[in-house]
Image (tube, rainbow, N blue to C red; front, side, top):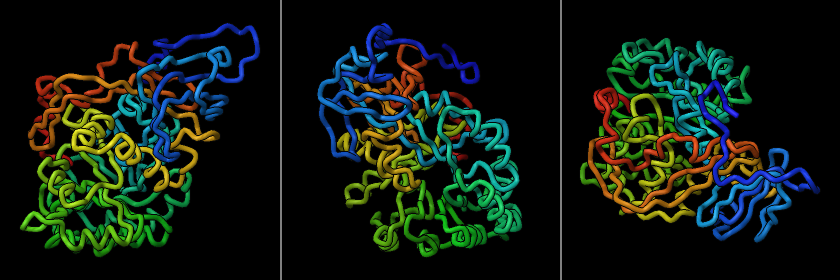
Length: 431
């Protein structure tokens, strides 16, 4: 069975359909895998069964005969469907946009949050033509710029009036089921004009407070002295994305120490989010931060047209970089499952495979070899092991598996296959 809107096929690989004879308790069974579910504190071999779009059982041994279909996953890892808190999936309108199903869902991100591709002017179209027709579960942070992220030629805040609080609030009230917060990008010049300055930040704060929602801030090279001025506006559960970028307004001071304002912000509940992107992940910054005990609370990709062919590829690719840095499977997957589920208010429904949760899961296999892990400055770290998603389940239905013929996750592809003229040209232009 094929999904013609995405070109993806629901094909069988390591999947065993069973005859209709007898009573089947479950629609689908994942058998033989090691379950890694940080929300439940589980890291052991478990069988997981689904019925009617929900997790129906998590047990040591569920009989194959009790399920209509089985994914045999011996020697593999199964996790809850991953949650990517920062993507750009408004193709055809935002110059950053990519199609969500083949780039997110098919790679294991069953739930994603679009980070400001749409503003008040464009959000109704985003909902109708992308969110409502995609199999990927898509939520959003609304851009405080009414136009959203349309074009590289005209910034979101070329004029201060684009930061329109009233229109943002009206849009939020019409789409509260989808809008999680307010996004603001602050980079001076190409995004924010000098006359706009920090006005967008303060307008985002005003709108978010009025709506009772958090803000997500892209801080790089803003119209201020340092990130201290930005963090001073941020509150509990606000999200500082691109936390490991290597340009002005970063988390480090001149002596390469974590700034006091960053520690203070974390203490009051500001969330540090990776937001890898095409220009916001610097090996030196992330390694130094981790040496000083500062870890991101969430791992996200900032996946978009300028990095989907490298250096990001997909969310699994970013997770693999943190596994290389020494995070355990439980710590890494917590940052793409239960922690973001809590931030978006869906804990217990997504980000876990507890009985009664929505039936989203990913089966991974470990691959051994030599893998080049590239940051946004062309710096390489070489790993010897990666995880690759081979089967994705959304709503209790197998969406994609390794037999479909999609190139394996570019999570750590050789450098030669990572480069493309478009991606290389834009790598340092787009975060």
